[in-house]
Length: 104
Image 1 (tube, rainbow, N blue to C red):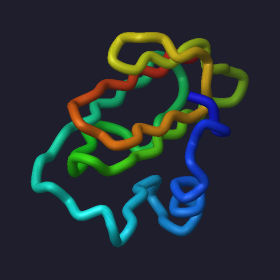
Image 2 (cartoon, helix red, strand yellow; image 1 turned 45 degrees about the vertical axis):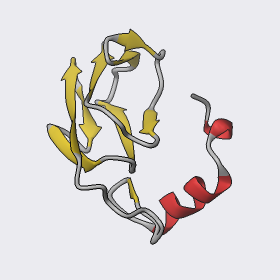
Image 3 (tube, rainbow, N blue to C red; image 1 turned 30 degrees about the vertical axis):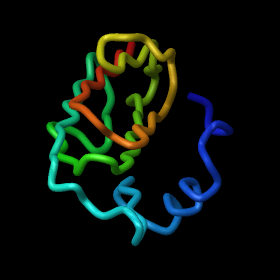
Image 4 (cartoon, helix red, strand yellow; image 1 turned 180 degrees about the vertical axis):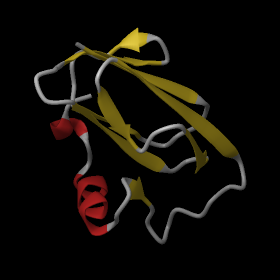
């Protein structure tokens, strides 16, 4: 997914809310929860990290930061490569997911 593929209202809402959590007043939680489990292989961080619990249908942003002198070599979403990106947005979450960031 490219940044330009994200609808304007989602980008606007992202800048208005903190913690990478995008919730609009029209986004009423369904009561169904999903988990996004994160991991980093190498020297760096992912934010937010750990096992993140989200309401079904919402959107969540994750950012990846390599330590100094290191670089992101790949990001795997549900074990599928999305390339060496510095962030990833799940839009309309309908199932559990995993993120693995590989840093060298």
